[in-house]
Image (tube, rainbow, N blue to C red; front, side, top):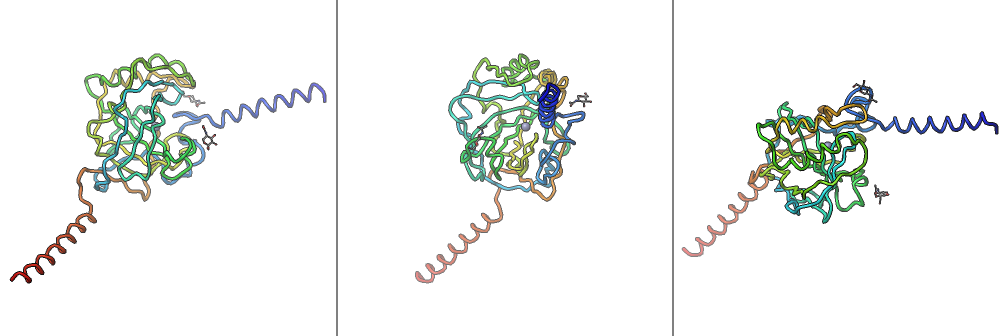
Length: 301
Ligand SMILES: *[C@@H]1O[C@H](CO)[C@@H](O)[C@H](O)[C@H]1NC(C)=O
Ligand SMILES: *[C@@H]1O[C@H](CO)[C@@H](O)[C@H](O)[C@H]1NC(C)=O
Ligand SMILES: [Zn+2]
């Protein structure tokens, strides 16, 4: 084998390697934007995000979500992965259950989208936080994405206000540090983080529907819980996110466009909202009580 052969082989290997890299490249604009995301992203039938039409949402009491250990203070690290700002918390696992969930879900990571991915009656807020959980019966997050209902994402919308949100200050200070460091390096967040403070006060009322991850491979394994109540954020705070760098310039925005709802239903969970079946049950109880009362009265008189 001559030098020429070796050169061709190594060139081929080099180019194959490059192709593998570019095949997985994706972004929010240009050649590799959402329209050219591969696989389920284009062929799926239960994709996210969606526009939530409040009038069409089915009002029902699905039970409150149970946020376990969300009130603890955690140390955490923050990463600019070129697509988002992502936070991982360390220490004891944080659990989500209740709300008609079939299992207990572990908090894997949190990240942000600017602007928001879910719109409500067509209105797009400047920021959306995703708290990503996976079913604890699976070994890890990536395995859970392969199973129906394997993933639960709690989404919190932030609406523009005139004052800074004090609960975002630590996250934003660390975001400024990593905004030029695209990659996997993790930077510690200076003070401890209490995840409960990143949820609205009323975290019992939410929109619920079945959908997908909003980034490639767009796996359709996600139960979405979009909180009804929103949190505030100032323009200056949103601008910190808008200055984050990606592999292809400033990450001015990182939201996926609206996907078709198709034949899916959106539920609006309201506390104490009586479903038809519980009304039926209480009318059954009344009937039984009436029969007993009548027979009791007959015996007495
Ligand atoms: C980078 O961004 C430019 C526009 O800002 C776009 O035309 C181009 O396709 C993008 N490149 C990649 C690799 O996404
Ligand atoms: C996730 O779990 C599966 C199954 O146990 C394993 O094959 C895979 O390597 C794990 N992936 C990661 C990223 O830990
Ligand atoms: Zn997300």
